[in-house]
Length: 259
Image 1 (cartoon, rainbow, N blue to C red):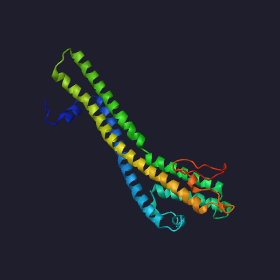
Image 2: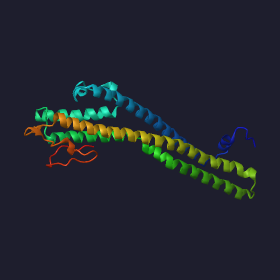
Image 3: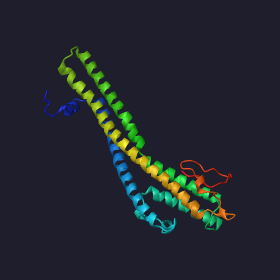
Image 4: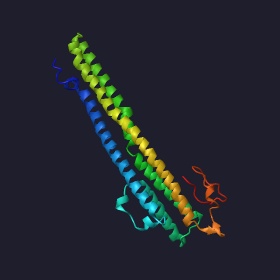
């Protein structure tokens, strides 16, 4: 028995058809998982960089609509914050044209809030896309490998029963080829597990930043573009907007809540 080529090569060379099918399925899982991992790392890195660029432009703007009025910018594509900002500004412009005034009433501002929430939800879904595949690889990879191992061991013992002799020489190839399926399953699950945990943390951080920016943007829109009523803003007091909660409204048609 030549083991100079290593245990993995020996196990693969003696793998049964079932074992090869199992390893092939796990190889596909691994390729898909690594494709998603690489794409997610690139997506999150790009989103973070473009968010920083957008915030730099936004902080230097004298008016909330300055960046919007310049039209879509290729330099800011891939920034969830920019998409959120642009979606809110688009709806604000629609409401301003609808009421034919720069200052819009509460109902119009509610539409702006809904637009912000919609874009926020779409951005969160985009950031989390593909994560279910990694979660499936983490939980399913070892079980697929275990299935291949149990199947291989079953075939090995069946062969021993037919041969009516149990020696290390007859058992070793079958057991080794069976165990390689479990190794393949773990090699799919372990990298996916570490990358999944890291990506989930980064995604939650970006989502939280988006949520905070949406609340900030809504407050800016209310301050700048909410129509005054009887000499005062229709929103009685911005302090009514509780962080993370809902505004205590004096009337059912009150302005939107923060995120």
